Length: 177
Image 1 (cartoon, rainbow, N blue to C red):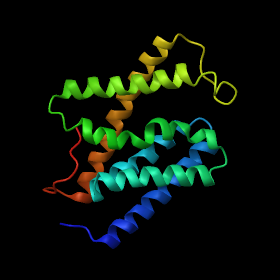
Image 2: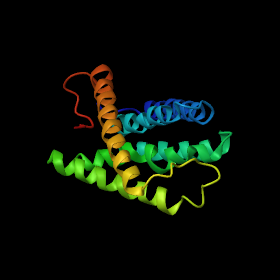
Image 3: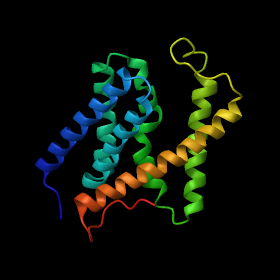
Image 4: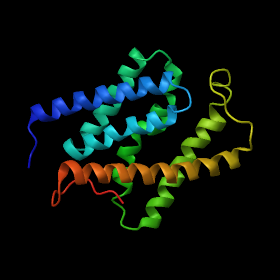
């Protein structure tokens, strides 16, 4: 069933508001910031499911813009901007590959590249504002990939729950593996 333009706009506004709420919580509540950023990233996938990839990209861009305007700690949005926000978009395209091992390998390669840029390229720039453990980069990348696999599993579980709960059986929408 084709969604009306009004439905898409209203859903986008709701998803944007919820994303900003989770991002705000992630910037002010220590200890669960990454969990809140992960939950904020789910709304991009919801927009992809309901409106298409363009809706997900638009939500990500709007969340970044509003986050930079409204959030008290501008640097705290960096994890969402650099990884969590666009993960649903990337996941949508990667999971079009039929081979599960190729999907996992590509996800890990992309994440390792983003992590290398973050750890090696931005360490000096962000040294005063973000605490990065002083472990070898290879160890941090391996730990990061393990985090990615757990995050991707939970992300897929929650999106599949959303599909079962709100889309119902027989609806053809974004298939996540």
